[in-house]
Amino acid sequence: MLFNEATGRPVVATDEARTVGSVSDLLVDPHTHRVVALRLRHKVHGADTLLWQDLTAFGADAVTVASAAKIVPAPAELERLAGAPGKLLHKRLLTTDGHSLGTVDNVNFDNATGELTSLIVGNTTVDGGRLRGCGTYAVVVAA
Image (cartoon, rainbow, N blue to C red; front, side, top):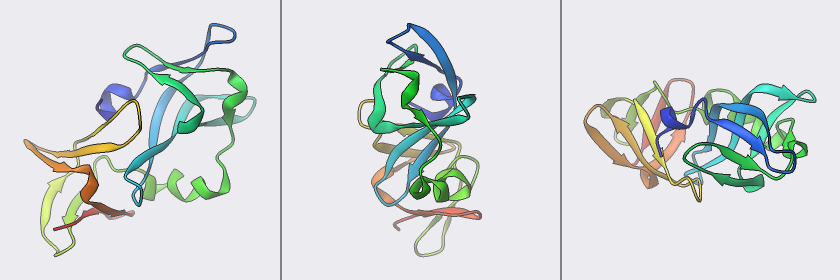
C-alpha cells in the first residue's frame, strides 16, 4: 500500500462501529524500516496517535481498531519521530556515498506488517530495507 493511499483513510473502532478519526500521517522508524504509528486528523480525548501494534487491520477501505481507547498521546519514544525524522515524503533521497536520487514521492509498505517495501522516486523504486536514516534535510539509503 502507498502512503498517499493510506492518508485520509478512516479509522473505525469496532467495539462501537464508529469512525474515530482518519489517518493524517504515518510515522516510520528508519532503523526498523517499519511504520510504527499512525497520526490521526482528529483527536480522541486529546490523543491523536495509534500505535501499529494496536491496529486490528489496515484494510482497503478503513483502518480498524478494537476501541477508541487505543488512541493515545504519542509515547516519549515516538516523539522524536513525530517531527521530521519520522516523515519520509517530499524529502531529498541521498545514498550513503552522497549521491542524490531525487525526492521521495511516495513510500510503499506492507499493510499487514508495516514493513517498508520501497521508496518511490519518480519512476524509480528503492528497496525499503536500504533505509538508513531520516532527518530534516534528507532521507538516506545504503548505496
